[in-house]
Amino acid sequence: MKNQFPLNKISWLPFCLSVAVVLFDACSDESFWKIEPEADFTITWLTPDNQAGPPPCSATLTNTTNTRGLVTSYVWTVNGVEIATSKDANYSFIASETYTVRLTATNCNTSQSKENTVTIPEMKVSGITISPSDDVSVVEGKTITLTATVTPVDAANKTITWDADNTGIATVNAQTGVVTGVSVGTTTIRATATDGSGVTAGKNVTVLKADSEVELKGIKMVPIKAGTFYMGSPSSEPERSSNEIPQHGVALSAFRLSAYAITNEQYCRFLNDRGIDGNGQGTVSGFSGTHQLIYSHNLGANYASGQWRPQDGYADHPVVYVTWYGAKAFCEWIGGRLPTEAEWEYACRAGTVTPFNTGNNLTTSQANYDGNYPYNRNPNGTYLGHTQPVGSYAPNAWGLYEMHGNVREWCGDWYSDGYGDFPNGAVDDPQGPDTGVRRVVRGGSWGSAAGGCRSAARAASGPDGCSDYQGFRLAAAPFQLTD
Ligand SMILES: [Ca+2]
Image 1: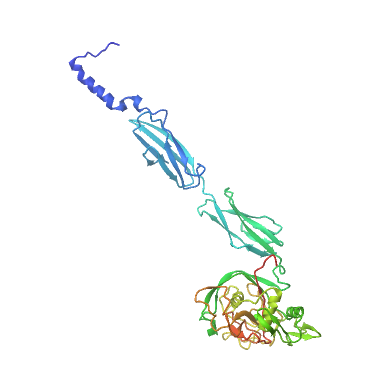
Image 2 (image 1 turned 135 degrees about the vertical axis):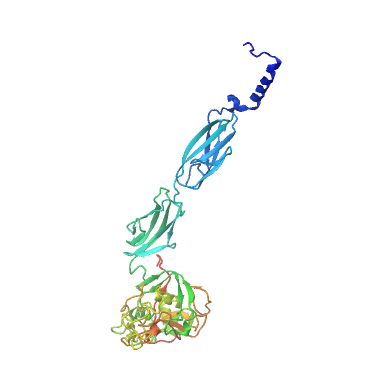
């Protein structure tokens, strides 16, 4: 084409200015600013599987816009709110919802945008913890409630469902976690999250046979759970004694305790099995020589014709005239031991903190003691003057009978006016003093005033001592399937 601009002096100046503008203002030339093909970006999730996870979920937003053209600015928005003006960006999505992520690239007066939607899923359960944390046992026909705690606490759906591995052994309510023992055995009870996370946790539950699996060679034993309590009496307790202080915290391991005091019939089985003759003497482990175990008595056991027999009509009464040595020897013969003083008080209280496990008073319809001496100016009751059959009175909350009254009961510990060498703080499984003269007896008897039957009331007797108001009950290790 012929040049239409004459190269004269007049036309040179505007021409040069025009060239200068073209050279230094890229926006005037489409070939510079065109962004091809379009604004674009990728999202990289900072999760192990590079998938959008539960909140907070972080991502790197990487700009992939074709930058062949000259881009003058980038603007990132999430749900319309600007989050960055850099080429690339990072963002943390903090809610379970759908977000719109938008990148706008601008050159001069032209903008191009790219939009992506991302959905952040709900926070799911990542762990389940079942309590109680220890292995659990339940007696046939009885129930125990399991509870499940899920993590994280922010999980959108914390609902779990329960199921049992073997419903012939135990069933469980799918919603409440209440387990019912069906038949003897062990099965796994599971808690499973219902949010699709697949998280599950299991707990072994052992079902015990009612009144027989937990028993020890024919003696009904009550499983006592591990726990803590305050031993001794508070200063506000009427008729308390100075040997019940200081009140102190005690933590105990699980054990078993016989539901009743050992009876004449049970004790005679031991005497005859051991071949103890009419002098009532025998050996006791840990002590040299022979010791008096028992004396014949008209409320207890009698020796005649080469056999020990309960007094007629007293087979199911607590054995009496039994010494501490005799009580210890029986417990070892049958595979158990005497309770410690702390175990005895813990079991007597059965979770109560009142003077009696019946509350603030003990009536003679609740226990066998001398009703002429009621507690704390309450009305008089009856006085029966001798033992009653075991199980004559209602049990405490843990199923133990006649912890108060009937016969007072030997414990394994030596007695001291304080609680031995107990520190002021809480103590674990205390065993009492290392040495002493007398052994602890607890719970009062048919001959006691009500105040002497209190849960905290302490008495003592020489290990050779015996009387018609003194017996014992059996303690043993926690239930094991190998028993
Ligand atoms: Ca008793």
